[in-house]
Image (cartoon, rainbow, N blue to C red; front, side, top):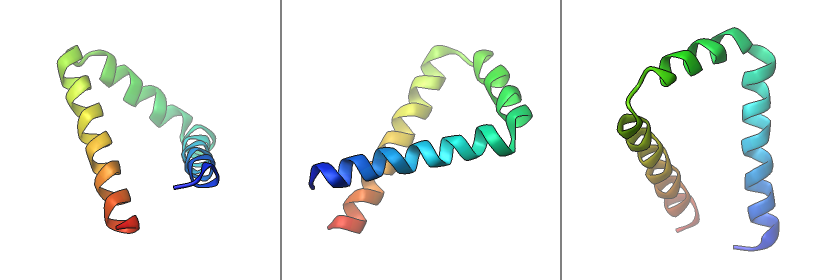
Length: 63
């Protein structure tokens, strides 16, 4: 994995997040309100599950 790969990955995350902010800002507000009502440990588990999914996808794609 090169620096170019890492920068490309970060850029893709920014593109996806930018699309959410641009196309569905009210949905994002509702999701943030719902998340603020969740206990911290649930949010942490969701974050870890997302992280593990991303790592698994990278592992499968890059072998």
